[in-house]
Length: 259
Image 1 (tube, rainbow, N blue to C red):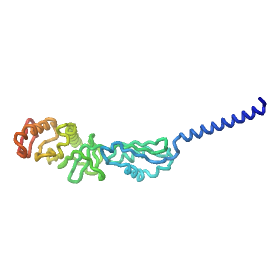
Image 2 (cartoon, rainbow, N blue to C red; image 1 turned 60 degrees about the vertical axis):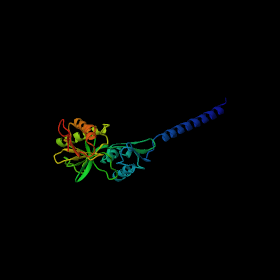
Image 3 (cartoon, rainbow, N blue to C red; image 1 turned 135 degrees about the vertical axis):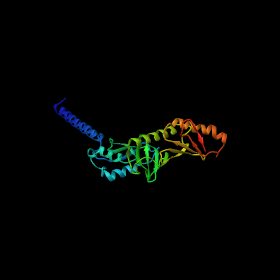
Image 4 (spheres, one colour; image 1 turned 45 degrees about the vertical axis):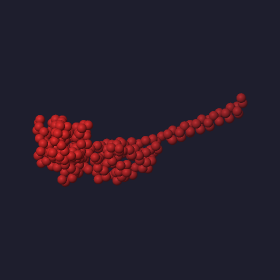
């Protein structure tokens, strides 16, 4: 092979090697995430259960409280601050913010799941399974057990957080345990539509059907009291007939007092 041919081959090889290096570099650049935020994707993880917060709400929260993020450098977007803004909404339990390789800001939201709605004279609020209170939402009302009357809580309709007063906290825990018992029971699930609190803290239960009102007393000895209420439906009501009694008291141990 002549010297001239070797020079030509070496030159072509050098050009091809340079081209490969350039292509490899460009390919690496294209595989890397964009340098700017290209958009927003929101997922409401439990939207089939509650609709307190929508995708449009999340976008509005960010636009109002965070400012511009689309088109901004990715490394300038404060994901902790984004989560803090979303988590500050009363009906949001937790949010997760992250950026995907296509440069989009992603937010996954889990809402609070109320177990009870407390309705006071000056307004109402929800309580979740942990006893966390949060305000009613104008956009959506969750179908949960309603407790009204003289509710022994100082919290108002705008309250958000856990109760710190020991007596109030104990009362809420008892009511939540009572509601949880009904939800998990084949007999009582969806049977009681209202729980009214009297001025001495005792409960009156209103069933979905019938004229009966059950005087339950304090929210304790739950299993025993519901057992006696069931005895009324299986024994007393069939024997005496519909409409015979309107008030049935299970307040006292071992007694079913019908009036």
